[in-house]
Length: 530
Image (cartoon, rainbow, N blue to C red; front, side, top):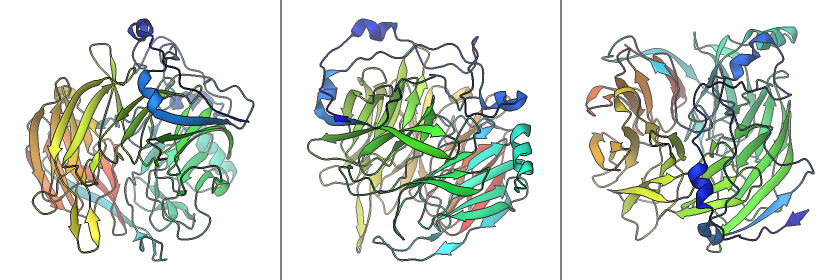
């Protein structure tokens, strides 16, 4: 049944005052595993104790009137989330883009002391596929966002793999490639841990592993080398593609790619599409069933979503190709508020719970269209959409021959931790002096630029953090010329820079004192900080 949800202009400020922050890491309550999770003593590794949560209000703010939308209901199952707990908290690894539902990149990188340099532990070579597409050939390696996943399999899952005579590694890397293949790599050795799965189309975005450990690996194809193109599920207990979601005839935009990394909340998987639709799927092992879909237009256009959706409780935060930032009630799929950035926004929103008791999101836009001369980065109140502060950085689009290189923010922000808790870090493409870019540290309270560290080339990759025992934060980031930088988070000083890969568009995953990152050549690297 299709129906149109009419905009309700209602502001409940009292509810906003009463609404509390996102789930803390730790608490007094205990989250129960969904029914499709692994039933064993160590399945608790997939969850962590969290306080009992109440949903954010069903408020709809006047700004939501700028969004003209329909909500298609495809299944009669009640749409309310079975749990508001963050299923990624306490999971044994990094299961989605930027580690968790809040996209706050809390990988837990740890160092024994202040590092001085990088060391390459191993390299892994992907296949290459030069099948022509409408936008060129793509080869191998990884693209944007291309973050690998990392998992430490609990004993119950290992037992299931062994029962089915499936190969695996105790610590495993999973990554999608521009060659169209999903690779599985032993984190310890860099060798293939199981056979790659060919999806037939280039994968640019980040995979997502179901945090209940039901065996579902969610994959989105990014380009059409072969028909059909769409989104799929790999059942790791069968080591095969068991579900495919292709062209949607009801979509308001004709591009079926899925760069966004989907996120599980309660019993549902939420997957933003570049066809202008946010999908809500019911999850079962090895498969998905469409529950409902949000289709929307702003200023008459249906933009696509390449950014991943960030989540706090029952609110999801999306960004799209026209700069629209939406807060969406995940129980109903109705927009709560709308905020407009000046240009295309592919940088994933980051949710932060802060000392003042508020919940905020951070994100920034690119510089792509005529008349836009600055890249805009904002801090917004997550419950109201109110602009807390804005920082504008000089940037421009650069045209070289038939190619164009957009400026602005492609990377996703990194929240400061340890001695940098007052900061937020982000890479910006400036193109003001050749193809240059900078690593920025902004004050989280005021939005002012604390420092700007020039990089040798612009960067699309998102920075990652490591803490020393004394709480000193080190940041690692890569650029699109293959340089890796080790940066002191407090001062912005570059401790080490090495020319390593061909092009680091992709973002790293972190474990301990190591990171794994893919390049646009065909090489995936494991690199340690020493």
